[in-house]
Length: 260
Length: 253
Image (cartoon, rainbow over all chains, first blue to last red):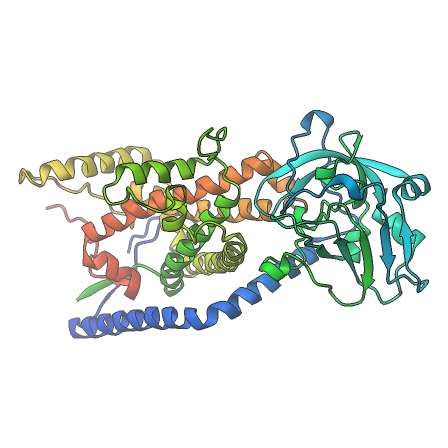
């Protein structure tokens, strides 16, 4: 062993030892057999444990998303020069705009115990309109920076308080269509914590103009703290519930909360 | 018999666990890539295709004998190097499972490096550039010298790794750390948007994350070739932890 000072970062000589060569061969064989057995066991175990592991990882990841969320942490906002193209990402056929004139949103699960229907004129005159330029991120990996305007979901929650036990809101669009144009109602779960985030809007305008049919006229959810798939277009129903409601994409294998 | 301890138990375990973890991350990652390819061009007027990976699939099927009649050439890459097209939900779930595994495994590896003192062997030296060029010359000349039965001595090195190995072995933990960081930045782009901005924003961070995969792939190929070229002792060392190649202090007569 060298006696010269190597410093804290200096490489040390590797520890050597004199071992009986019989022992070396025995240990070597033992370790290799263990390694092979371990590999086989891992392969066999992976097949049966994978579904459970996948569920657990998804659950953990959803919990991580929830614990990262804070109602006081704002998402990044952008300038008008940073606005990008927002494509029509209706999963099926874009609905015919004929639903728009008779459109209203129905609130259920309110503290008042009755259901309330609001039309767009009602919503836009009674609530103050807020603007924000934020990023909408799709589960697929693309994103778009867009200039939104609308009422704060939180203001609606204050004007029409949900029943006291409610923790969730089911956000629904009954005008959604599947790829062949048949009715395919779209529904997602949103936790009330995310709904009451100051940047969660019920948007009425995109890039300074009233929402076009491909962007969910006349009212869509804009929750930038959630993936785009939670941002329901042409919202027709808001139902406050105590238990996590069904979610269109969670039923198709995606995560539940989609907090980003 | 004189043996030398080379790798700590935790380093060896995490080393081998990286094989299935990285394989799972890459296969599921390519399926995630499929949903929104980074490398796109204007849609082809005939096929409507815009994805460069699909172009490569089309090219492969057109030029590789036996693949002429492949049913879906644009999907060739995805069918052979990922879970397949249209598998986003499953791919995301797998990617997260493996990503959590990768982070845990990385922590185990670092713990092993600290416990065994192996981290010191990975640190760069002042002489590394010169030594790396020497090693590079050795590797380049080796396949030429060997068939000609010329003497082609391995450069002498009195450290655990030569300079090229050190560069490679220190790159991988750094690439792992950056993969995890960019992964979080694109997985939670709202909560971690300041992290994404370090890498140039959300879209640029996806590109980083994609290219970090290539760092692993570009490392693995020569790594495996050189370990086999180096011989059984090196491979066994990563399983048993010790080696019989003992460096003795050079005695000058």
